[in-house]
Length: 416
Ligand SMILES: [Zn+2]
Image (tube, rainbow, N blue to C red; front, top):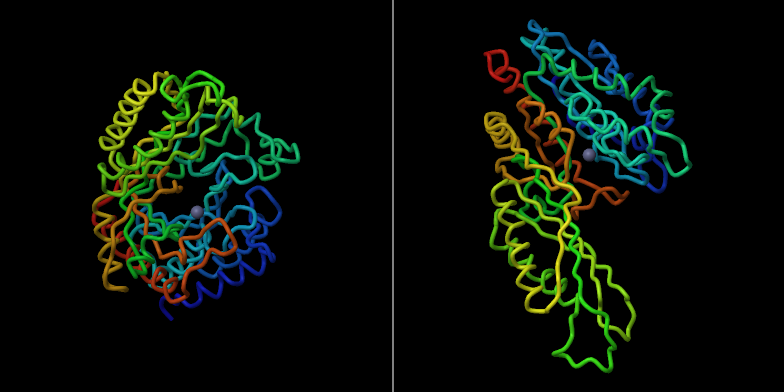
């Protein structure tokens, strides 16, 4: 038989039928539809002989025991956002089943091979992303905040978890799942426009962006729009406007895919007859290189001071959130590039803007790499999300090659 990538496409369509409606995928974690998807996955894997287990954080594991306990992990998430696409998350899981089948067919592998379906990657119901993978990685540190979370109907997160035998007090026990993990592989749709614009099916993911997220408050003086001469104004919006344009130059100077976004400005008093007194501006900066990200932030701050002086206003900065860039493993990136070369010809290296479960596993010290497949029109988290079937098939073939190379590497003593 061997690997059958067309079967993966057929199974993805089956899952879409089973768990979607006219508005898209409805596999929101900790719901009946999500559970139906997990049951369906259980049935799919059964024929491979892999053993199923569910860990303390609700992650679903399928293990093909090898000659060694050291394990190569292939992972994804079957949960979706409401009205989501048919590929985000589940592509990696269903493609992983095909890899398991092929490995099982070849006989006992030299190292164990484990497929993991991470619980609640999207955080769609309670607003907390990467639930299962952060528990397994040991980085979940917000249990007290999680206890307070409710969904839109007022249901509490702890109660929703309890229905699936998950308890926040013991969720971190999932860490033991990574004890024997030697390497982690994840295939995902790109969810952006880069590969399509290059006319390429597949790409090697270099890592996930670091993020600096800040609230910048500009303080000026409200004054009458009619009686205040232009040179006597202390206009808070002028500072925000100058910075909104300056961050484009800052990102351009940084190069290498760096991005800066001013996602909103709220002005007060916000009436047509007054100069703006306060302008609250949101800034998001992302880059794969920690030093470049720090430079971009320093430049934005220095520019804001300059603009404040020019406009005779004041400026305050407040960090909302930040995360360091995560670079994937160099050896695995090399295997990924080879695998893509073998099935599709050219590979492109690109960073990931969105975070993924792979970032958590990489942070936990497990050598990790991700493989991207082209997204049409760069759309995701909508039912319009799509990828050409021939590209999906290439992605399954590349993931299988990547898994083979990684298994051989770990068997020879590579990996963690
Ligand atoms: Zn995803």
